[in-house]
Length: 439
Image: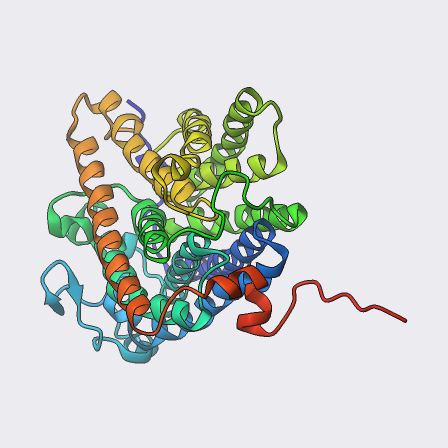
């Protein structure tokens, strides 16, 4: 049995707490840059006449969700445990309008979170970036065929009804002096799921919503394997690089302190995607004959997705095994859309939903001190499965309903004619590559 508790520094004083808040703000900036990273990553993989539309969906999420988070999203996600509208499911959206409690230093969640005295505004800012990127990730499933206005409506409603409540289930908890969860979070349901940085709240959540929207909007014109090759591979690689860079804040920042657990999360965030690249490329080499740069980028992202919930509870050796495993699994999973007949344009389901499930369940077997190998019990694996599939079903059902209502009322999908002509000029009046000609 490996004891990782020695990596936690529970010492708290004014200097330590200020440094923890500083680290959290730096980590938040790293996570925020991941959303432009998603825009580049997705933008390079769509058709040249859809790149502006694809990137705008990410920037639209940054604008809308960032504002909603400050108005009421933070209160819905991290309000007091005594302020439930529906016990254990939905917090009062009017609990902390415009972060008033944090400004007046009345907030308690951040003080309780990980038993550290982190400034409430620093914590609110860090968590805002999680909400933004979760919504942005969904957009890859409906590339090349969605109306921007309808996407923005979906983003606001889905964030309100799905992401904010799920974030409260996963991240809003109270610790006692010994570091034991005593209230909130998954403990409301008696599960005690280990989801350190959002395998369920971010990746499974976004992947399930992406699947729902792909079904609502239907297939692209001429949908088949090899329909559209990435129009700008370097753009996608830039996006993957920004994602990996920002992910260190995503995972290591989730400790809320500059301590040994944060360092462990950092190392695992380096090595799991590295192994994911290897796993994916091995599959490509034997399945298709050639390893590709898009495959390398996708393998890295798959490894990052899988390590997100587990980066605090795996030794680096097990993180390598996880990276290779998820690289292999996701390399095969992206072809499910052709066999099952749903058009997940940029493999949100194959990478984020499947990768999130692999990483979350993996903890139940290999998690230090809690997994089957160390504990000899299936209890944690059962908890991980209930948490993962619970979020998946909740997100899928609500995303499908929201998307279906939008499609049946104002329309979500652009017309076939507009899709063929190009989303960028029709929806945004712009071209990604408007080259001047001289006479």
